[in-house]
Length: 303
Image (tube, rainbow, N blue to C red; front, side):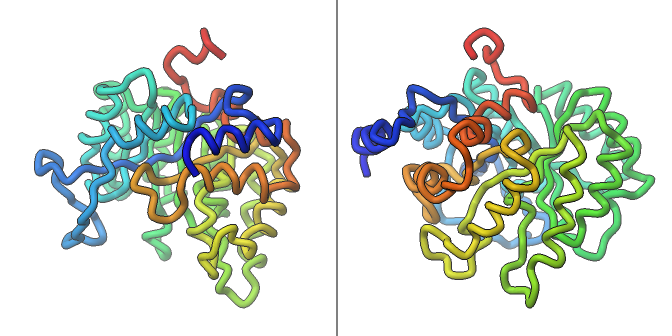
């Protein structure tokens, strides 16, 4: 579907792009430029053949009238956020940025301060999903990190397993000044004998007004991998029923080239298949809620 046809289809459903604010809260970009070498912490020999540079995303945002996006280090670069910083400063009117810091670095709070103060980042992404047996998330060693985040007004987003949610729940209660985004619907394991047993642990986070759930990347969760990913819809429905529209945000994950889900289908998934969400709550999820989490350039003057 080209841009004209896409916008026409939205208008037919009374949801034209001109009528709503679109903010992609999870955008991973990368380059193969050797100035930004890969240092993947878990896959040091990783080979990536196709780049997804920031310029591709800028064009995509123009085509689909996406006002802002949150840049995320895709882990390819490890704890070096230089390409994300480069992208942020090349297009400062379009983006805010999250980086990565080593959660097991005893000076992790200092690394957070460095990227926020020196590079203008607004938060960090942590991925305990890669450390399923570790307890660093809610360890006392991480208290200085969370205290620093409260001072800086930093946002944390978490790529996390359902069974790890109680650790995040503890920290959310201990440090209410830190805004938290849970990535990819909390990553329910649809291959488990009973996915709901662990998935429901995420629901306890609804008591924290500083926590949002990212209704993003349905293809990451699906077993069938067939659009429109009908097997994941019950989890989207349950999350909406538990958290309501005010605690949901939208993200896509990848820019062009989009090998999983083209942008028109990303938006169609929300507009057509998340029909259990009200129009007002979709508007919150697709953009308005993000304004309460991040400080987007010029947002206070234009929104």
